[in-house]
Image (spheres, helix red, strand yellow):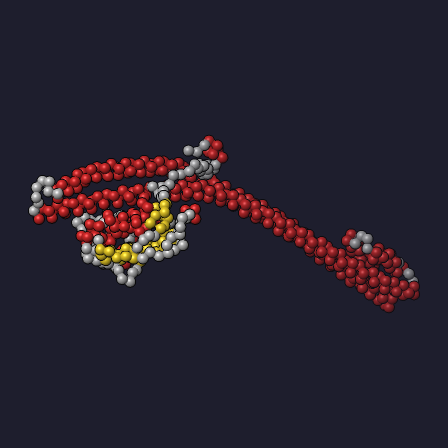
Length: 495
């Protein structure tokens, strides 16, 4: 259950968390867009204003140059034709030049050419009142007037270029500032994305681990409660309920199996004991037909007992996965298992070829015996009468390989992918009075898997069916005895 503190600080819902994440991630980007818009607006306004001023000042400088030429031209025309109207035009152009020069002085307040032009204008304004001869002698004043006008025009162009350089430098500064702001704000957005992604993914991963833990059936360690949106916290609480419910169902199943195994074994033992007494002639001699029926009852009881034991083994493997490895002689284990099936092998008239020991290896005795027992039982059940059963083994420094092969009908290709599934029965029918449970190979595969090994169906050049068990080399801590033999031979015998 969640605590009051976790409820206080977690978002109320997943939708609120997603919306909050979207707004928080978009906020730095919105600030960046706003600042970029303001900077671009400022640069645009400055560029527009500077362009207008540059055009106006350039045009005024050109107009002053043209007026200087017109003033000089008008004075020289008057000196030639001596018309009074030309002096009026001369005065008007001087006045226009003076007015434009005053505005140009605002642009170039400290320029010496502007000051020189003001003095030149005063001198040129005296010309209309002079006698004609003196007027003609003063025409040389226009040379310096034209030079100062041209110099003022160049100064104006330089001032415009300087202003453009200032605007360019300011634009570069704004660009650099925008780049730094972009890097900072985008980084902030990425950090916020990572933060909110973690806030969303972390409880989801906690739930995923919880579900995997429930599915694997392992005992959960002490875990922190899920802190996050209300929907995920509620889901965690439902998983708690589901886990407790599954534990209850598992306990009920275990109890049912324990009771059923006891209830089934007790009357089955009585049946087998009674059939054994009848076979011993306690109730009188039996006819051949009666003995045949009694043998069928005893064989069926043995099959039923084996099915019950397989079912209990399968259930035990699903929940008790702790193994105890010990150094054992694999040849001895194989002989013990073969001894259990001696009567069945004699009845099938199967010839058994088994490797010669000793073959030492570190493994769990019970799990390894279960594998061999199920493989041999499978060979007896599905192998041909009077056929052949071979048990081969070899070992090196890395792994142990055990093969159980028998003659008979090959396993169809369509059955092989599901061969080790629990309760799956293929197309080949089991030979005998009772139908199999379909869990023998599943139990064997689980026993191999618990020892970090594999059990697989492989091809064999001589026999139709061959199962290969591969067990890896145990941890070095367990290997403090003599090294295992490299190869175990094969010794044939008839049971």
